[in-house]
Image (cartoon, rainbow, N blue to C red; front, side, top):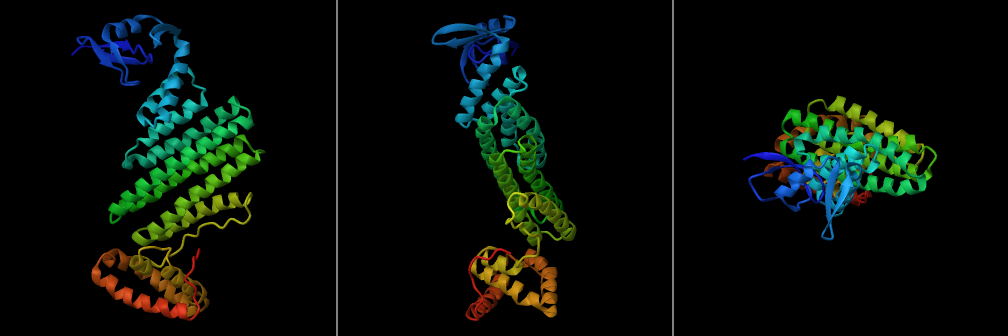
Length: 359
């Protein structure tokens, strides 16, 4: 099979086609073309033929990026991730300073990443945001730019949540492997970093815009929500390096919580601490009436005496290992379920509430 250079007669993309066949399909826009016409189209220097309404329109190469942009937006609206990435990348060839193409070419590339590549791709997305935000600032007045900033935020929420959920599922499947526990921390740091840096870049370009500041703060809060879930998963299922990891994650949380409180003084940051390991294992959730009761008992009763605090310390030293080894066994669940049910009932009868509790 002989492949020769050609240009799609519809979108103008550079392609390679089999010249032994009479026709083909463009891999970019999906349009059928006549092989001879596509080859001739390539041989016309700096000119692309676009079919419109049955007529052939000749445009210069400088105009091609605008046509690619139309196709890119169409692909975005159709949620065709692969084509959107390809067309936005083609836009960049003619319009390297186009904020939209800079943002979405990377965005759609990261959307297609495999689970094992998530940390690296998340860092790529994070690092690209400075250029995109700066180009947006230089392209549009603030009142118009805010529309697209909100669009970028919405897309980054979708992307970061998708990446986080994918990697969390991967971690839960292979959590018994020490290296997976370690990579989970790195992955969440990279994913949260997308929203950390988005807020940082916005604040740098729009330091006096109150509407932008609201987006900045909400982006940072969203990033910290990933860290809260991570800290729960890690302390429940991983034994290696818990202390060091907990300290470093808390330092990261405190850094952005402090920045958030400059604009929202009432914000309470997530705290990386030990969890009700056995109770969470038995009842299936850290947030349920039984565990809320036990957490209140821990904080407002046990934690007020030296021997209560000693018990808490010993419990958190031993229970993660017990849950890891026996948490899925029937006897372990039955043994603790009857005892915890009785304890929770007595605590409720003695006035300990079972309503929502955020520690």
